[in-house]
Image 1: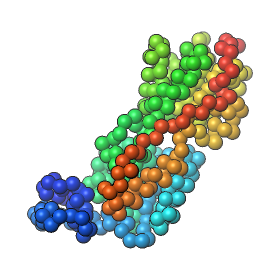
Image 2 (image 1 turned 45 degrees about the vertical axis):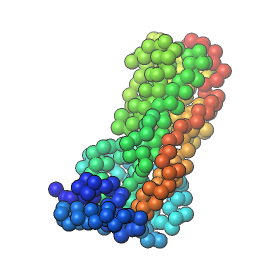
Image 3 (image 1 turned 120 degrees about the vertical axis):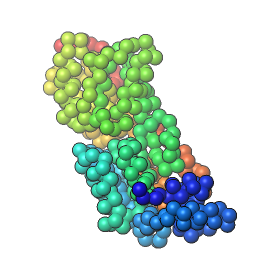
Image 4 (image 1 turned 90 degrees about the vertical axis):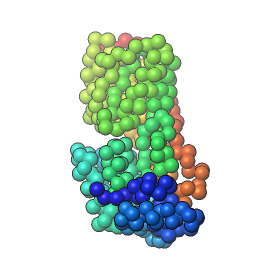
Length: 347
């Protein structure tokens, strides 16, 4: 098996960042430590991966890797990444991966990209950024990356990870619906490979439990982060003999589909049915009534992730304690789709 920088670090008894600084001939490493690293390199016959050092000049290239079909999400992310890249004189390669590809194929695709386009660092987004198989293979290939994930607590690699507390935001949205006197709240979930789907579902369940309400499996519907999925599942749940009086959709696109289905059935929103989404995408502001949602500043998050990457590959991250707190809590925005509730029965 190929010897990695982590193997050298383990043998030398130092951090992999120290090994990186020795390999890249950086200062700030004591002579004794440098000798240990050099001895480990010689003993293991370690061959540095040159692609991991391509961001060391004034002009270089970073990559944005995604497999999310939501165009608004991608465009918003691009704005943030470009802002950080241009501010630091870096070029950007944008690379979509096929959603259905297996982890091995995705890694091969990413490695080929780094070689073909001389990309020295990557900004990874869900669900690629949340797949441990992909991450371990990128680590083994010594390809630097920062990543954006959904998590309610700091991940083990918090120094290079932006994490969004979807669980707490979903809890707050469900609490809002509960304060509006709703007791039958439907949850329309997103794609299962996204950690955000599970985190938002857990927040929904936690709020119900705290109010002494059971989690009704007939009101939790699995699906996808699409308008069509929201419309189809809302039609299904609104056809139940005991229909819900509120729908919490895992994103705004799903919520907009649910709103469309309600309109088709003549269900008045919010008088008969409250609807809430997530993300504060254009869907939430362009519908009528406008959607209650949780605002995620994805451009700001993407810019932050890019700044982390630049510091990692330039060897500056270890000196910047301010970049160790990378948590974001989406802000709850209450709009017309969940207020003025009358709790009238559906007709």
